[in-house]
Structures are given as structure tokens and as C-alpha cells.
Amino acid sequence: MHVVNLHWHLDERAVSQVIAALLLIAIAVAAAILLYVFSIGLIGSLGSGGGQQTKEQIIMEAYNFQTSSLLINLRNVGTASVDLGGADYFLNGVQLGTPGGSCAATLAPSDHSTATLSPNTASLVSGAAHPLKIVTPSGGVFAYTVTYGGSS
Image (cartoon, one colour):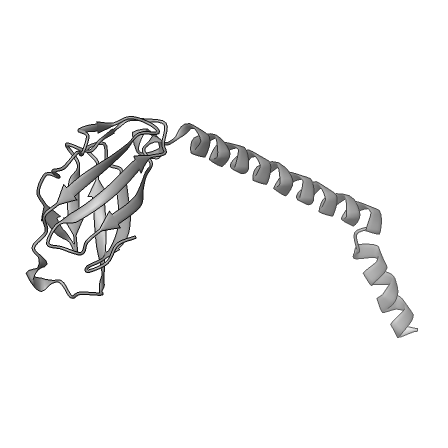
């Protein structure tokens, strides 16, 4: 008799299964609404961001680094003109001077240009890869790898 009485008290205090199911559904819907609002805000801020740097895209089509000068052939594949004349050039983290050769000061979209750089080759190892970085005045950073004593 004592066990039946205990069972009766548990049934009296419990929440019905229908109300429990409705509460779980309400919590799931509220969580989905919060996730939706958060994701719309995040997507909106990502879509409106960006600037000149995202429109500048330069690829290095070819290079020749078999002598003491580095010749690089660059092509603008972006939608904005790139100021190559005002850009900074770095080889192994060391800033190089202004490029010579037929390097255009401003590279329009779809145009290409050949730049000649004169790095200090005394510390370079023939056959080793060296990082080349171009930083435009608007903040675009383009990184490549060139091999001293090679071309591509």
C-alpha cells in the first residue's frame, strides 16, 4: 500500500506530456528565430564590407630570376586599376627599390606589365625559393614565391 501511495504523489506533481512537448517546441522555435536574426545580421555585414583591396587582384604570370635582376610579368585580373608605381616590393622581407623596365605606373584591369627589380643577390641561395610581396598604396597585399636561378 505504501508503494501505491508514493506512485500517486509522483503522478500528481508531474507535468503532462502534452505541455512538455509544447514547451520543447516553443524553445526550439525561439532558438531558430535567434539563429536566423544572428545569421542575417552577419551576412549583411559581410556583404557590405570590402573595399579597394578586394577589387585589386594581381597575378604573376611569369618571372625570370637567373641573373642579378628579377623580371616579373604581372597581370591585373581584378576590377580596379592598381598603382604599381607607388607599390612597395619586398624580397625576403627586404624592401626593394622602384621597379624599372616597362612597368606601367598604373595597371588597368586586364592589362599586363613587366617589372624589373634589382635585389641584393649576395645573400640569396641559388635554387632556393624566396618570398616576393607586393603591397599597393590602397593596402592590397600580393604574395608570390620566386626561385633564385630559375624562371617560370
